[in-house]
Length: 438
Image (cartoon, one colour):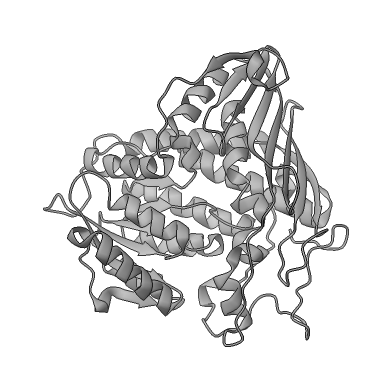
């Protein structure tokens, strides 16, 4: 049953994607070559995604802007209007804010237009569902959920998108870095022999800052600083580590079936929920291990990459690696290099939008969204194990009904948050062995 759930789901999704890309009519902006765009989420990543979408070939117009916060929505409207006036067709009436702003922005689109879903990950499933129901193509930023129920909502929406012939591309941008694509193929073709182990690192000296304001409610402060709170971001296991977890799984051609992990706060004193160190040990069906480690502490060693060891050598690649390489042994230093990617460097963030808009204009099939969604689930499994300190297998995680943010569809801008600070403004963090969020 475990293999059926994971592998047959992927095979069935791939087959459906192939069918979806065959013989379908072009569904963008009926009667026009212009693709109309709406953005949902005007933070840093959202702004970048919008500029990238507006920099694709062919006529494109930004017609609606949405964010939970008024200053975010209006502030970005001013920025993009000044930078790309020829590609802006929104008005004051199509700039929206509030928790239901995504509906209003998507309602401005016609079937076959495009929405950029770049709000925090906890909201991705309901935004994706609404977009698919409206018949629009989707740029689906990672992460795709923060727990099993939210991820399953995304999976159901993706299945419906396939049935409608809609195009979807995910924000796992390193899949669109030419050199990563080249080395992954090399590894899949046996370039390092059989994969023996995978190592995923993200060590950095700085962490995201939490800047609460007295005039904001706890919920509003958390939304403004979503990376500092587990229920919105899914923890670094889901939001930040998913890139290189995905790259290792892509090389392996499957996802792990078991995980154990731990995490905590050792140096961080900021009054938020973010941990400053996390480690998760994954195991694939054949017993091969994948170790994921992340740390955010000042004055410590930094690393941002994936390392894969095989029976004939090793490779260094992934998010954070501009020069992926293969080595003859297990010492990943330049003197042992036996292969380098020859593809040119490219802007992987821009490339994902080039590909999405080509999919729409040329009626090409979507990328392997199924695999990307399962990679997010790998991060969610890690979150479950890390927060609880338990060993968790695929079936236990897949059957989990625990919701980190229940009834999120009805969350209001002035609602109480799912977690609240104590009288001194402190938030309780997870405690392995006591916390159980799965």
